[in-house]
Length: 73
Image (cartoon, rainbow, N blue to C red; front, side):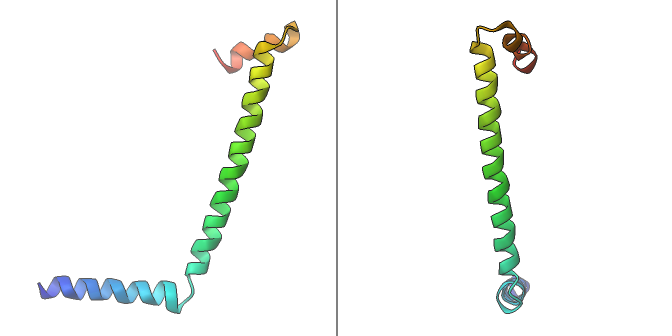
């Protein structure tokens, strides 16, 4: 039981030193900001590409229709 208490105390001390005392939480927030930016850009790009493929499949012009089956079989 004392080993468990010692382990929890060690984890608590490490957490406090790394995140609070040394201000490493700022690195985590910076990483979160980059992750959200990449997610937003990927969603916009995916929406634009999906709209383009949809427009190609619904088009009445042959040059627009023939590459679309290669993109979506």
